[in-house]
Image: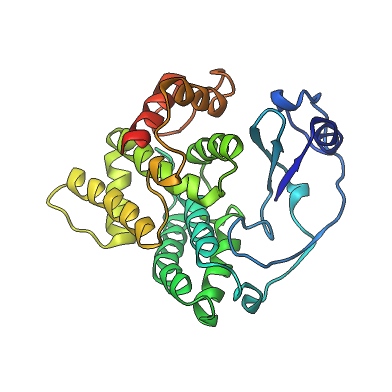
Length: 296
């Protein structure tokens, strides 16, 4: 769920949430209730039908920030894949990326093992890889669109990360880009994931190797080769969906160093927070990842 509006309306909305969002200048208010809502799904992507997450966008300042609370979860959801048949392939692809990313952002968490959660996450990603391309090529493929829709729900209701912390580092990159350039969310994620993965994989090679073996069926000569091939296959899959895999392909041009630093500052709330679980990323690390995506 994403809420857009001027600062005044955002401040009003924020009074219903326990949150601290500097760019909205809202006070931290304990959440005790929220307006009950239902969901009729017309695109499989955000997982709003089961998710506890929402996003606020300040269009005046060009900033986005997430809010998470159980009160965001709808009271009911109607999910009929036929309602997605008229979607443009681009929006289907954006949704596929977002669904995969909701699990991937829970997947690469060091030193927190849970075999059952891994099996669920691995299976969901395999199903998405198989059916995402089918739905992209044929939006009226009921079975494929049904699988995508169901995966969208399961990927963002915390099931695929049960027993682990969350990361959502790449989402923060995407929010910085989306707020500044008004880009489709899924496209910002595919544009940044490869550069993030290349930057951090060496700090947990075994986890990326596990991902390569279980999700992509890769059997490299060693863990490093398997990990790197898993990253390459993921990026290639995004390409097969005609999704951007760098900033140039987002059609925003080659960005200046000042702009890249501005994006890094926005992603880290002015350099006050560190991102990622595999390796703590400060604003300079994030700047380097944006640099890599800029020239990828």
